Image 1: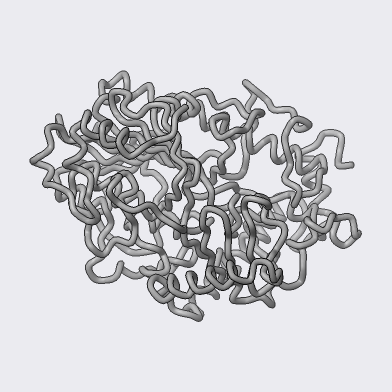
Image 2: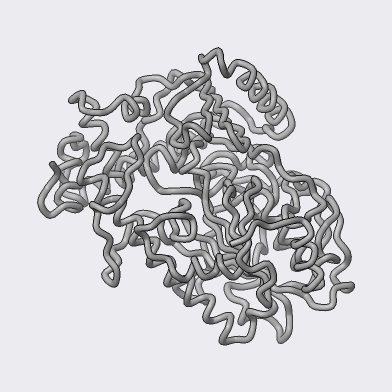
Length: 494
C-alpha cells in the first residue's frame, strides 16, 4: 500500500480527465467541457464501524471490500456528522450540517422544507442531465432507505440505473441494511466468539462476545452483497465509467457507539474506486467528514458546487485539508439530549449540554436491541463492572470531555480536569464555540409536539416488542437478560 500524495492525485485525475471536474474551492467546469461524463455510485452500509479486514480486523472475512480498497483509495479517518441515520443521511444528500438545516433530531415527524436556497444534490445532478436513483440491495425495483429529516418532492428519478435513458450518466445510491440490527448468522463462515476482541469499556462476558461475533458475521454478509453489486457493474460494462464510493451512514450499532460521539459511533470506512485502476492501492489519512461527500461527488461530475454548501471537495488537492471534524447529538427517538464535539487528528473534545442526564437515559430502540445494555445495567447494580465500564453507567455525565486519542484510543480517560491539558482544552473549547456560532442554527428546546409524538410511539413499540417476546408489558432487567441468554448463548451466560 502507498500513501497518497498531491502530485500522484493530480496525475491520476489527469489520466481520467478529472481536473475539469474538481472544484478549486467552490467552482467546477461545466459538464460539457468533460471528455466523458462519469457515473457516480454510492454503496451505503447501515451502521458500519471500521471492522473490515482492510481496516485491520483479523477475525472478520471481507475479501471483496478488501479487494475494493486495494483497487482504490482507502480513507482511514472518515467521520459522520452524527451517529444515527436520519440526520447523517440528511447531511449526505445536502452537503450541510444537520444543525444548519433543522435536521439534527432523529426522525422528525413534523417535517419542514429545507431552508431557502438549499436543495438536495439529486436536483443538481438532474439539472446537469444525470439520472438519479436510490435502490434497495434486495430488489432494484424497490426504493432504498432515505430517512431524511426534511420534506422535498421528486428526490429521485427511479430506483435503479437500468431505468435511465440509453447512455445517460447516473448518480445512484444502493442502500444495504447490513450490519444494522438485528444481526444475521453467517452460516457460510461463522465466527468463534472466543476469537473476537472486546473493547475494555464492555464486560468480557459470553453475551458480549456472542453479540460482537454476530455483528462481524453480518459484516461478512454485507461483503458478499457488495460483491454482487460490483460484479453487476462489470457485467454491464459500467465499471470503467463509474466512480464507486463505499461507506457507512454511521459507525457501529453498539452501546456507547451509535447515537454517541465517541469514535466507534462516528468512524466508518470510506473506500473510493476510480475507473481503470487509477490511484489503486492508495491509503489516505487526512480527516474527512460525510458532509464532504456531496460537494466531492458533484465536482467529479463537473457540476458547480453551490456556495452555501458547508462540506469541502476533499478530492481536490488544491483544497486545504480539514483540521477538525464537527459532530453532534440531539434527540434520538424519544430520548432528549444535546451533545457537541470536535475531533482533531489527536484530540476529541465533547460538550454535554445536559450533564444531569445519564448516558443511559431510557431508549426503546437500545433497550430492546442491545443485549449488552441490559447486561451492564445488571452487573452495575451488582458492583461487577470495571472502572472503565462504570463510567458509561454513571447517573450524570461530565459537562466536558477531553480525550488524547493517541494515548487513549478507547476514549476512557477524561482529561478535562487535568492541568497538563489546560491549553489544549481551552483551544478546543474556543474551536467548538466558533463552530457552534457558525453552524448550529437549531431551535432549542425542540417543538414539544415532536418529543411527545416520539415518546408515545416509542412506548407503544416497547410494549409490543416485550409482549411478543413473552416478557409482559414491563419486564425486569433480569427477565430481559434471561431472554437474551437463551437467544444468544445455548449454554446460558456465565
